[in-house]
Length: 299
Image (cartoon, rainbow, N blue to C red; front, side):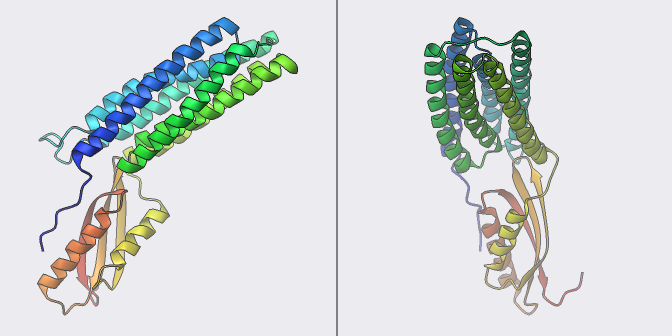
């Protein structure tokens, strides 16, 4: 039995990546320009914080484009297993740019809070933030769909950032509305909420991608899925050893499975290949190594 690992067709995968890059870059550039102009014209700190967030999104879009371009390069002598391990670096870069945006947003909000705040007119900020929220919601849905298709951690981070932008734009709008009808301090207060949300997402994104870079193991749900899939193969009696390790954004799996010690070598080899096929069909798994042992064997 000669088995070849089923792979996402490279051309289709590349198309998904380039689609995500184009959506992200164009969307973030348009929003950064629109929010920056509106913040300058109205003097809203909440809108300025949201504009700073969008400018950081433009920076990470460029980094993402470069990183994903490296990711989709075919294997070569320097990287015989491909270049997908560059991808978590993109996620860390996204987190770093989000942290810079959070700092700038909080700085501006604190300064305005100390000065007493300003009442902000609703017209232009309301329109800009409403359009921004709609665009970012659409980007979130589209990028999340692509991230699931190609099992991409950097695109998952990008999708989460798009969702957080919907929430930050909403917070900015509430702050501007409050500054007009309640107290001018609600505008910088909303800016602080936006900054806190940016910092939170930067931390979550950095933690996830550092896990991929440092060889962390799989979560309990994925480990259970690996064992369950191996046990579906006819002839596998039990799984008595399993080790997982992230090498880049996907897992390398090492499992020892027990079979009837009286089966032929040909049958044992067929079981081995089928277990590998089952495990490598799991989206989170890149490679699987399987060791067959007779059930009465003692390590």
